[in-house]
Length: 402
Image (cartoon, rainbow, N blue to C red; front, side, top):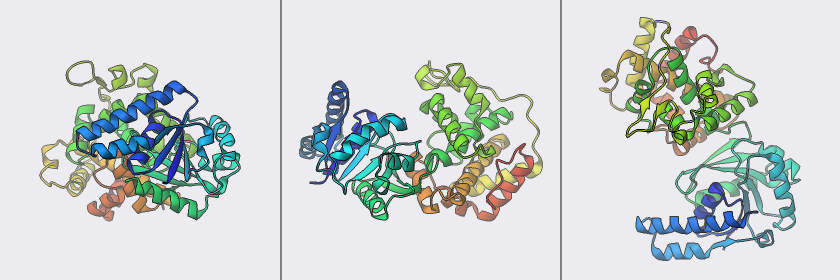
């Protein structure tokens, strides 16, 4: 029976263990805390029971999966085919935790990190096993989210990557291959969805409700950018933005929003504090932030462009006409920024177009991949939009790759 060893029994580690045992693998789960381990085993059992109740799996399969889950120690990792670390995002702690395990793990075992922000290449080099170290970045909650970003470090052997892809696929996941770059695919390409929304607000273009409505109604996004940042938590979202921005050399496209950072400094983190862009304390959310009152007027050229862009971007041509010009302009700016960032990601060697499309649909539930959307809208219209938006922007954030 194929076996995975998982270091860390927190939310991510236990979620990955559930994915593995549900796919017929044996999972050896280890953690420094017995209490955390016991809770993880209990929670996985409850989630399996819930899957049986919802008829997602049979009672027999759930019972069999439970028998393949082991609360283990490092000595139980000697027969693992793959080892996945899912502990705190601190590379020194990861290195210290993994090094003793290398004496136990088989020489041919894949060493994978679930990191979302650290260099997989540095991790592999520091533990002395760069050729068999890769990233397997699951998304939370792992049993539900379909994506795994398989990250190629500088010295990862191709056979290791191919095995990691095969394993994740056999676990029922959608796989996107990417290079070991800051933010990988999703945490980079998704930045403009949040950032340009805040810029629209700061420019006095529209209020949060209008912008969220535009993205859901025209684009088919499940959540608008302000709803989503309130859900994620502005502390988490801004930390990711600042990390990606810094590591990519501070490009204008990825510059953090002062408005969002002010929310964090004021302790308005979103749903978890009942207050963010919206007030969540009542029966329904109420927008707190208001658009700036000194926004510059928009030209007829830009308004006409937004109408054409929205018509081409939606699956229902009647929808854009139901929204006002400010909402259409907001949609134009946000989606054009996302499509541009995807193009820059290809230019920078992050991933291929197909992998980016897979990642954005499976990782953050975009209704279309950026390159699918570009093709549907028409590359000429997207290019025209970026040229016109670049003329109106105060910085270079809409400038496309050469």
